[in-house]
Amino acid sequence: MGTSQLERELKKSVPFHSLEQEAVINILRTNDQFQNRFGRLFRQHGLTMSQYNILRILRGAGEPLPSLAIGNRMIQVVPAITGLIDRLEKRELVERSRCTKDRRVVYVSITDAGLEILDKLDEPVSELHKKLAGHLSDEELRQLSRLLEKARQSCLEPDNSHS
Image (cartoon, rainbow, N blue to C red; front, side, top):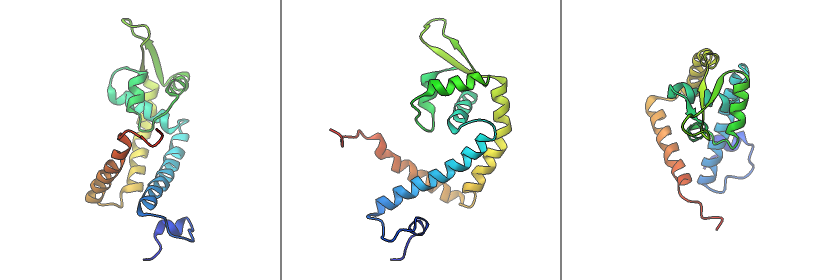
């Protein structure tokens, strides 16, 4: 069997130990390259990928959300959601308000400035999606999504390896 494209990219002198190893490293490498591209785009607007994700979540919800609800909807799990919201609030892209019924609950809402920045990013983000995956057919895109969802199923099972 010949050398895979990934083996050539990584200049591996020996083959991967298993198909599972090669597939996972392929996912990680692709993720890294995609994140770099999106990171560059968001930095031009003074945002991180996670901050952009928070703004998208708030716009999509159409109503203020508690921080915990925002954290549960994030693409990437982030431990410091409060810090991310702090930085967005400092830039006046979001605002916080306390729940009148339960003072422990803080709602976060997107401001007009936050909506404005998303409006500016909508087209460039869409273009980047096309640039990164537009060479795949609709069927290939559906298949890729199905396979990635199937691969993620193993992450939903309890991890007993550290017991």
